[in-house]
Image (cartoon, rainbow, N blue to C red; front, side):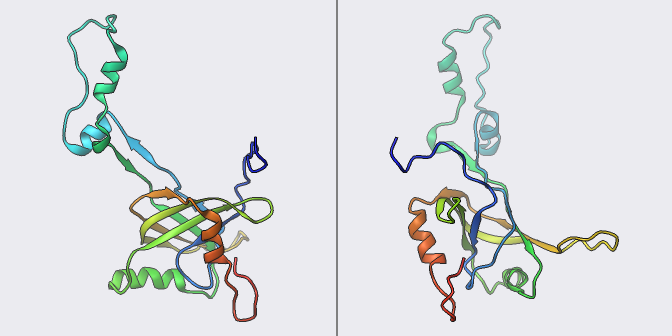
Length: 189
C-alpha cells in the first residue's frame, strides 16, 4: 500500500458544498447522494419493454443460469440510473440566497447549476467529491417553530438534478472553489 491509500473510513461530519455562490454557504447536512441502476423489470418498465425471461422449463431445471440472468438484463445502452433529489440543510441566517435561488428559478431568471459536495479528511483537506449535474431547486422548507423546545432554526433546499458523478480532481476543484479569499484575506471554506 502506498502512503496515500486509506483503510479507515472518513468521518461524515466534515464536508463542503458549493452551489455556485460567493462567499460559499455552509450546510449542516447533505442527503440524497445515491445512484440506483435500474435492471430487469425496473428497466423494462422504464423503457416500455418486457425483458423478463419467462420459460416453460420446470423450476428445478436451472439450465445455464448465468445466460438466463444476463439475457434478462437490458443492454448497456438501455440501462438507466436514477438518483433521489439532493437535500441541503443549514441554520437560518439573514442570508437569503437559497430563497432567492428558488424565486429566481420560478421566475425563469436563472439556469440550472452544478452542485459540488466534497468530503473532507481530518485535516480539512478534500478526500472525495461528487458533482450533481444541472441542479434546480424544487422545494424550500423553512424552520419548524415550536415554543416549548429549544434548538437551531434550519432551512432545507431540495434540488432535482440530472445525475451524480465522482469528481476526479477533487483537490483542484477544492482549491478553485474554496481556495479564494474574501476582501479581508480570509480563506473561504
